[in-house]
Length: 248
Ligand code: ZN
Image (tube, rainbow, N blue to C red):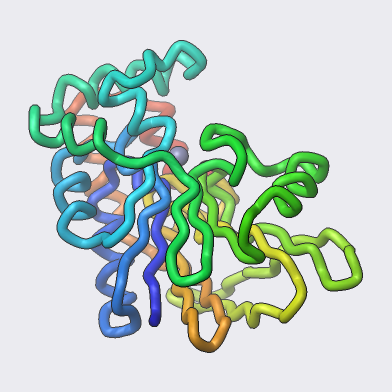
């Protein structure tokens, strides 16, 4: 089975649409690792698109805050502003859909899917120490995570060496391939669809081929100007608009 794995869409409909266009015909199922909403201008359209698309969707911290499960107290002022704006935009049906999303980990086809990390849905996997523990904690050898908006992830080799997963995708729409090694453990991040933070503004996603043990990382440019224009018209904070073009 080939899975399209998307994460951290953050109400960016143009980025999501472009990812789906590029991935068309290359997957059978969709898994979403959370943060459908928050920051961007199209929360309702994105919640509805993911509902129609994904066989598994896990909740993210922004989903929890935007539907009122949490109060966004630990968010910075700009993120909190966008959270409250999003809450005001969401229809009753879409608020309920977000409230009903499961927390990770979810297991499917021998793989594990989480928003933050296998032991804590809100943990950011960036530091070597936390990553090392998470690699040991994961119930299955290969887990997919989001939350950091950084495409790639980490692996623990058969020999016990912790290293980063190389996913540098050069030209537009290009892809990097990762062949999963027997005996190694992985934490793999497909990157963020709607707000990448790895200094590459292009929308990110991954495709997992579960039978062949292969992950393809993709980056693709999207209609950023339209997203930014919608954000300005919605009165969303300027720094959130500008950061999209810098991928940070
Ligand atoms: Zn996020």
